[in-house]
Image 1: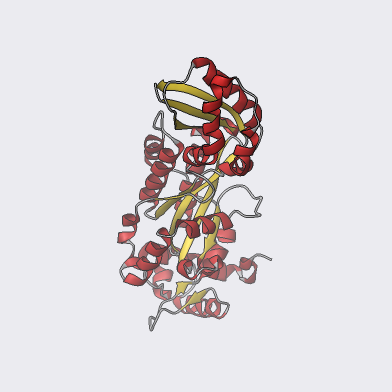
Image 2: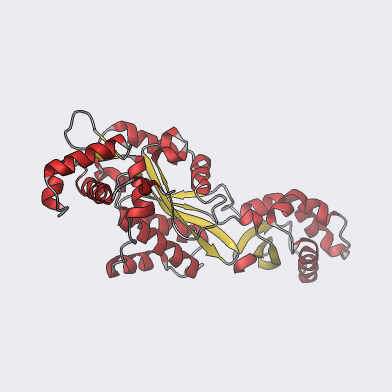
Length: 351
């Protein structure tokens, strides 16, 4: 049963009005203000009684001694699951801003994600976050060695979905062209068709007994001894990698007037593995497409109990990552959901 099923039609209307009022003003909502501003069609006394009922059911609470009330996590959950009819339409200026910020030619995945997190943060006035593609589970499709200097080669790896990564390989002296071609053949023969997770654990063993021409043995030995390090250098955006936008966009939010919430958020950004886990948990085992929303105490993490995380997956072929925002539970959910959803689609198109 949905949480909102606990509510009568009047309670739904009053709760929605309280949430909208609090999101707009950051001030507790009173019955007279709701009566004047939201056309509820009932008297302030009726609204006041309805708000008392909502408080008893756990949807509203009193902040300190204020006569007004503010929504609880339970209220926001009911709102996003049942009361929010649809995310608002992206306005042209927002769409154009996102496209201009993210659509930069010849950019790496890291650069695109960083720009996406920053742009999304500015437009929503929340903290933009992005989780890199889960490359460890992707399959290596081909490798190429390209000469770029007398003592340097460029190793080009092509993964599922057409994702390309590169890393420089330092060699001792000049390597003959036929040796480069022979080692390229062996690398493709022994390494392609396997996931990066498998290769990281076994690249040396897979190459150790390869039969090659004498001129190629020294070059191949570099990959036998340093293969794992080369893969790590070529693939910095693995499953634990998270990108954080500018925390300064949150400065205008009244929730950060005091030091406690800001300290919690900054602590979280300084622990990328913990933040990555929080983002990934929102999508773990959930096969529903679209935006995922985790509110306050739902995180199970004290550092996130005052925050909402709104995320969506983006895709690059068979690879997937996460883009979204973190902000106080008091946020304009309709606007944030539409912008996160649009950004995930834009990233999927670009990647």
